[in-house]
Image (cartoon, rainbow, N blue to C red; front, side, top):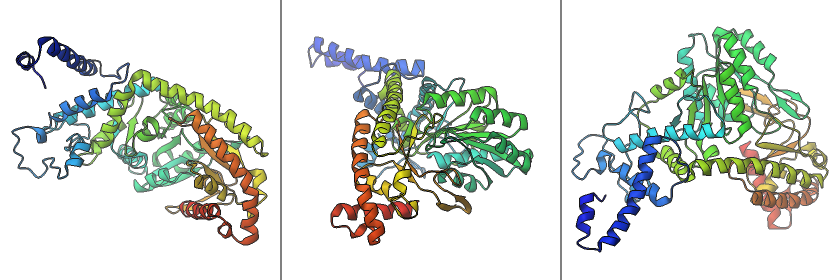
Length: 501
């Protein structure tokens, strides 16, 4: 805001020494912006909040709705009624992209366009630091993972033969991917994983058989997944990539929260180096600790056509909000802060496995052996299933939830679910008949050792209460007949969990 002339004039009001000191401080912040625009990668050290806010304010002033002399007479002039909403968005109200390309520049919004392009560059750098090598351009979309998968599938569909209306999916019992396929107007072919010890692994022979039975020309793509609930392991993406290359079939990787795990980044890198990977989709909220609402699409640097097609097929303008959240977070972290977050997560994963194993061992249960899953872990509930009717231990998860433990999933045998007309037996386990009931917990980005300690403390309480509540549930017809408020809260949580299954 201060030009050299303004600083010179300010010396007539305040001592020159003080003005010089102030101008040096503002120049230091200006150099941060200059370096960012020059290097186009994450700054080594994270920026302070004042520097980020100053940068966003300067960028916002480049948008036409913030021009001092602007006269807007169009139907879309970034008018915002509420000052609170305007401040929340730094007056960046034009959005990003144009009808022909979500990454295109906007004539009325030079500042918003600049921030959007910078975010795509910075997130690509962050993904490289995480371990995704030989990656092409990254595309940040203001859509969560499921809708982004649908856009990717529609782009894939446009590039395949007209008969290619089938998707071969390596089963992962989470409804989003199923709905994404069906929303794209494609037919789902489900391939179940194979059980190896405790772990559910990719059945590559079954995937190949499914593609060949459908006919490769009739298959739009194969969808594999990296990040998933234990005891399912990450898919053998590189093996599937080689198969897809040989059969000339598309391949999409659902890498929802896989950026945070070096093991998964290496597998995705192997996949696009050794075979065919058309697109990889990942969430912004799970990987970068921002609010839900964004996703990143990328591919290997040699095969970027599908990512380009997604960029050009996005209808109309897009919200800048998820992009802005991501940009602010990346600038705040810096390269060193981001690397530190990744290293801390890997450390907490090991800590959780040790502490959780010790905790559940006291109650006769065990950690499931799932070396192919570096984020989620499963704990058997086999001994406790014998205490309740039909072995249904679902309300164990409700007990944890009512004690402020979120994120755990209890999976009991025999569940059946209909997702958009596709019926799954043993839903939740990614297997028709997984041999033991279990619950899951994850050491995801942002989890601390203190979180693990508190979780284990609450888990012990739940195990101790479980026998009493199980007897009451079967003997009296439901935990809601207990004699205290905690029993009633557990019962309410149990009913809510069952509705949401």
